[in-house]
Image 1 (spheres, rainbow, N blue to C red):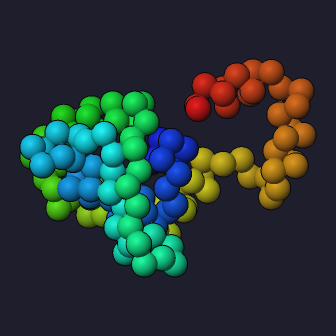
Image 2 (image 1 turned 120 degrees about the vertical axis):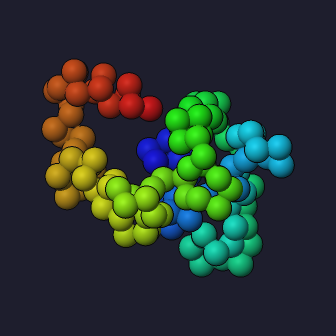
Length: 126
């Protein structure tokens, strides 16, 4: 999910709506672009075609291989523990749990200014 956010610019609603059909070509392999339909976008009537960053494409290829038969076109890319799709609220909660507990970016920046190791870890995530 992190790569979908950072490298494809997807919001929670779009990430929650992603199925394998939206990222695979007709032959079933992971495509070079993903199709995000209008129903998965916030406040728009048009879908989008987003080129896949090579790292995101490689991650999807690996995930598809690991999932095997569970990566059928109608199945969500990211599943809950119960096997169903995630809601946009669940995606937002997942990202909230990843983020520092600071209420503002300024506070986060101040806490990272003197911590070189934290900076290295942050850059490594990108």
